[in-house]
Length: 319
Image 1 (tube, rainbow, N blue to C red):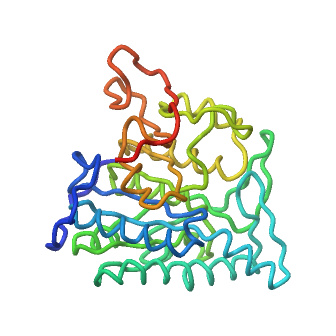
Image 2 (cartoon, rainbow, N blue to C red; image 1 turned 180 degrees about the vertical axis):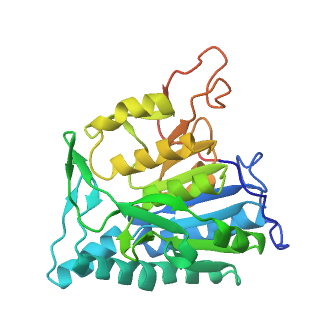
Image 3 (cartoon, rainbow, N blue to C red; image 1 turned 135 degrees about the horizontal axis):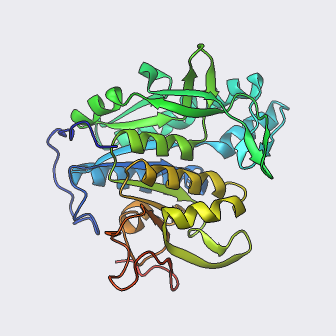
């Protein structure tokens, strides 16, 4: 989906150092899903906020979508409420949803906004409920081809990007909690990876960057093996049924994003300081897995290797 119109950021000073691999991204929207260990490590939190501010000052329009799984699970355990996942998605009863909303919108979002705003009045927090940004219907999990009820978990069916585009046009950084409204006024917990993918498609984003706790998608997931460096959408589609745990919605989100018009979706290791800048904008090399649309002009492929997937050859050599 094409962007409505490229938002014009408010004037900001240039970064002290050039940002690597950003040649094609100034003026473009980039959606970053912030999750994993980076969310509970204070040094990594500050590093992430600095990366976001650097992107903004380089002329990129970042949109942050955050998770909060470990914090939610911790509070549920303290309240003696069951913590349960099915096919990588949290089983969400009405009581669990109350905790999810409290943690996401009342704690995690506010902390991220505060860290970014330590660099100036830049970030604005919202949830998908605000201005009907995300509308969802109830979705099941799928286990061995069968639907399993997981409660108040939503599938995004409509995105209204106008509020986010308005914030971007004023040089702000939207920080979005993955909650959505239902058509009947109900509220749904939406997996953050899938919420980020839906927003990326609706905003006409140049790129989706997903931070996680591994170096990328391993060839023999979950056993290990080499990290797959590049995948086409069709190749990923074939792999999805074999993926388990939290990697399943991450890669499903990447697939949805590129099929919605996003140029590339990249999964990187958020445990590395400065990961967004170091690894998020690569099309080849480095550490991570990049998913491209099915098209002849795939920028990640060699001219003599149309369509083939490639695997990284080891740890990233950071610039």
